[in-house]
Image (tube, rainbow, N blue to C red; front, side, top):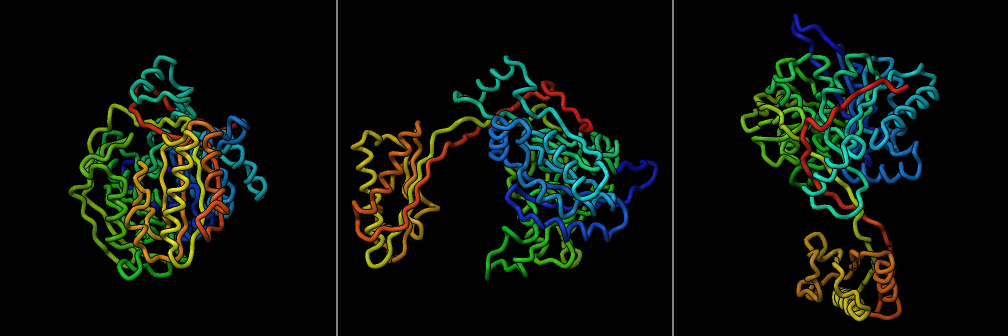
Length: 461
């Protein structure tokens, strides 16, 4: 993807194939079809790695050393791999999770099953703090984050440099673990445009373009849609986004051709501001981006141009997420319907609360959700018993959900059993009980001095 810096490089088209691990497996197909219709350099990214997803991958790898990568990797990549290889479209994805090398092996198996030659798969290493840092350094991080429970994972958010180096070396697929989501797109930009690593304005523009792509269909109207207020056409056929990046930092947001959804100023502005704590200083491993003077304007149907993004020197530290063993989660649900349903549901919640107090479990952190009346805006601190708005509700179809955090599986199972007992211990008319007991993961964040880490990349054997 490397181009000469002696003349203006052609624009780079980058498409998004996934915005999270649970995304649609076929979303990348129209994206790749659209990319193939364009001349010039192209790339496809898959963003599948959330904080909890990575911790779960670490747990899976403990049980099976060859696992720990994105379980839907084959489903995401198989529909487009042959077209990408034949069309010269590199794939960049953080589907390596806790085991990039294992993901690389799976990609080679997939290529073989599709009748393709062996792939040039590069992996990025260095985000796993449990293997990259000394014991003293890890203790310093734990002191900073005040985490006392056993760690499951500790990973720093790496930047785009290693991705770019791998692409310059001819990688057809680049597999990462934990990197900043926008870096998946900034890497191919660095490889193609050869921007200096201190060209903060263009690095910031590339980072914000990656930020537009990272949530998949969200910028094309997915999470944006609100019938009658923010209508989106053909949502069931939602297309995923494509960025047209220019060498000077201008970029256009569009989407896969012949798909549903929409790209307009409203969808783009919503995505620009998504998860941005400070629009004047969006901290990433590669640059601090400033969008306060950015201009967002529609230049055609499903085409929005963004200019004026500014950047500042990258932070001296890298963000890291530490996941650790949390309390057990007990959940129990039961439905109440018909006349006086809300009052019966409220009484059931009160019964469970009093029963747990009698069993010596009154100190557990609990909540009750009256789904259909009071749930999303409920209180995690237990102030819910016989709430007036529940008792006064005319609703005749409610689902009561009791949830509690318990230190042990035994206590969690006792909570679930009390919900189950409502079947015959009252109040009247309860049905459809479902109970689950789940070990939970909790997370915290900290900052790692950049000089503590030495990220690398290599071609997987």
